[in-house]
Amino acid sequence: MSNYVQNVLADLIAKNPGEPEFHQAATEILESLEVIFDKHPEYEKAGLLERFVEPERTVMFRVPWVDDNGKVHVNKGYRVQFNSAIGPYKGGFRFHPTVNLSILKFLGLEQILKNSLTGLPIGGGKGGSDFDPSGKSDGEIMRFCQSFMSELYRHIGPNVDVPAGDIGVGAREIGYLFGQYKRLRGAFENGVLTGKGLSYGGSLIRPEATGFGAVYFAQKVLEHYGDSIEGKTVVISGFGNVAWGAVKKATELGAKVIAISGPDGYIYDENGVSTDEKINYMLEMRASGRNRVQDYAEKFGVPFYAKEKPWGLKADIMMPCATQNEVGMAEAEKMVANGVKYYIEVSNMPTSNEALKYIIDSGVTVAPSKAVNAGGVAVSALEMSQNSMRMSWSSEEVDAKLKTIMVNIHDNAAAAAEEFGYGYDLVKGANIAGFKKVAEAMMAQGII
Image (spheres, rainbow, N blue to C red):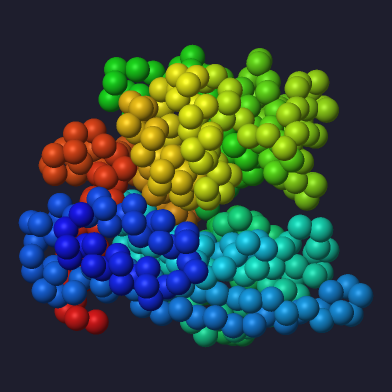
């Protein structure tokens, strides 16, 4: 790593103590960008990297709300508006007890590059709260969302910051958030949030988009090697919207998903999660609020492995779709020992840096999450376009646009890696391709 990049990283870690997720993401990204700064010394003179790794604005606030028994609770709310060089801040809200500033900063930093890779005019941001919607009534969730938006509405807007959903924030939460925003603004600005219901400006296939896009990306990776996704066995973690979309599209393209997982363990279905009944049941599991993949095992009579992860199974393709840091060295060693060919990251930063290096060094082809899971934000941006044009596209039209975007992301990442001498290294290529566009815009706009 060059002295300049190394110094910026060391300074970032020193100025942001106790933020391991942010440090991990920044380290992985900055290591890839060294070659760009070797070719562009003017970037160092302009302090571009120092500005790139520092959020433009971080909003933190309390969120008081009242439960059904009249008890007052107070949660923390955040919005990290990281970079607006190429468009309004764009990135999801996450409602989960683990949410903290470190996680949101890592997600926001990744979001800058992810959004740039789509080729669409959107910057990077992330937000959320340590509120846990699990087990809460609709009334409690509504009151929380209204309180959350009562502060945040001052800081977002269709041309300023356009949040979406993420873990713990689905169509229900987006509806309550939008309703409160509309109430406070006194205007129907439906371009302020994406992931909305179809009746008030949402886009078709938005719930499936991240999973669909991930499989389209995987398809391109296999094609690079003259291979096909048809007939391949796939292991997927999670069973929410992302995993559901990935299972649905992988099955449609002829692959067989043999495992899905939850916080309680994983199921193994040797016949595949491959029928409409099985795939649709994933939606029932998600809507139940029970957060148990064991329900699938009980309904379809397949084995369930409590408190275990599915990465010890033998499969052609592994697709972590659940959350960050779900694959460490122990899981990576099991995958490699079982001969996995393709490791397709879908959730944000699902792999520790050490484990990712081990997987790559073992000869496994890796596709990084910032490229693979860009389908969700791509369709969110398409939703913004539909809102601004006061029209809607069919599901076939949205799906076709999504596939084109994912193919372009793959090709641009592959080309960037090749240009800088990394061969077919999609991890480095995605970082470089995403950063180049942002860097050019930042340089053009001066020191701001």
